[in-house]
Length: 466
Ligand code: GLY
Ligand code: MN
Image (cartoon, rainbow, N blue to C red; front, top):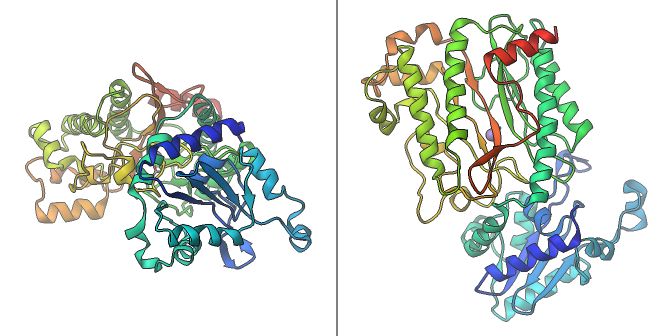
């Protein structure tokens, strides 16, 4: 973890930003069961708890009393029965000391503090819980039915937390860059292995192994698929076939929980066909356009739309789209080929703070989420500021079911040459994703070295590893 002063400063800043006063209740995560109680998922601390306390053990609560300027960490010391199974662990007071908190108490006392505050009519601020266990704990603590919890979350706290977590400090950027270095190794390993006859899960296993060897595992479920047109495809059953593309969307988290997220789309056997090159270079041009444009003050939604124009122009050159580019983008016609957003914030979560609500993370009073297919999936639309870390991940996909639907309905037929799409129905999809930091003057690509990305770089890299 970082030094305790960093966590003390973050908590003090948080308290200052919740102007209405009261208590801030920050639950850590507990263990979560897979298929029977004692078989648990790999433990992952809640990212806001991690941000404000830095502690990675289960079953702790943090409370910040804004009005009385106090902070308390709640958790139970292990009994000898626990220690037999878990080995010795720091006591709650030792954990508190690491996070710069002197007041630590057993979990049972949390109910007293909360009940007293409720009796006094004080406001208790909490973020939207996303795990069933924490929903039940909050329900129990605050006597709110689980189904009604969403009505009681603190928008003021959500906005305050986002306002701190959305700008990454130098030490956070250094952690993210560590995650990017692991991501580089994962993706170059996939390039080495991408040969005819290899099964997708062999590549998934190898790259996820790297994320465990070098850090804290993956930052999300890896996508390793010849069916890149299925956006979040978590099936690894395919055997690699010459002539197809393999889409690998994968990243690592560091042992402190900071993420990377990269996508490369590579040819099985190391050589792109002409058709693949043509589509690939359009996506790469859109990815490069996003780097050209990303800078403080720019609306990310505008950058998304500008990249969409690059895609439309490229598809027009291939004869797949037609008409006026601006009109096509305004109508959302490009969403047939890219039905997702350009990118998202990244930090302690790969989709940073998505649990708090994209409404507060990616949008604000100035920017509202669109309902149009494509832009509606843009997780981040608001103005960029120095310190933000973003992904840039344009793609082009040929989704047979969507093409059929639009073609049958004649949707956007003035912009799409449906009769030219037949040769692309088994193409799959291409996405190219990199991570960037918004600086004072523009942006900087994260990682020591860009993962091979041009057609030539990828073919050369794959040839050298034959
Ligand atoms: N890399 C997966 C995603 O951004 O949704
Ligand atoms: Mn991503």
